[in-house]
Image (cartoon, rainbow, N blue to C red; front, side, top):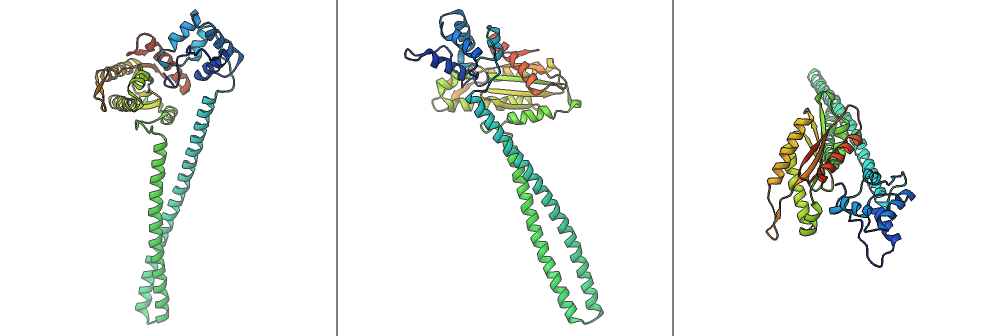
Length: 346
């Protein structure tokens, strides 16, 4: 599921590795802080690798799946609050950097918009003044042969015309900059690999959903045994599989929002459909993806059937994204436990 490619089976060890080192690796792989409660759970698992607890953990973490908080609590462990692991701190730093950059883009775009409006106002006012001055100069010339006044007036008209040209050029450059900033904002909300919207786009769409367009449903989808594809065929092939499945999901789910949420996980925000209809749609998409046949274009080797599992839930009014996502994620976990290649709805 989430971060599946980053995790490894937790019971692996080498003869010359110490229990202490393996406990540290266990905590890091599953995103647990070095709290005594987490240490005690890791010790119980790793100190008896053939015991029932270790066997259960091995089953839950098969194919590189990371333990979740409710897994640990269900196994009589305790999840404690504490400082995040290095991996989480890096993710938090990355999110903070993205937020800062995004804020700068928004602020810059606002300034450019204000400048563009000012340029247009100046251009309109200058253009009107130039026309009025030209008409006045023509009247003066017709009334009398006042050479000096005519010369001065003509010079002023020429300068105003020059200013109009420069203002027009500045306005065009401003419009071009605004377009580039808009493109940058769109890029910040798009996954580089698949071209789909990313997690940031999902969070903004969730927060900005229109109540009148409801009801809303949320699906969390995860490619089954994706680590096996990467291990057997390489990450290049794995990336192409991600692209193909992501685009297929986006096409089949249109006009609903499909995003790459991270790793081999996709999220779908569906609006204006009931939970039962949303589940039927996702199941149709699942069947479509399962019927596709993929090949390694370098070796012409068949990749076999590639499927995904999904958990889908109705979004309650005023609930935060984290709550709805966690509920859909638990349903996804249930679909995986029941054999994969299925949709679990509740």
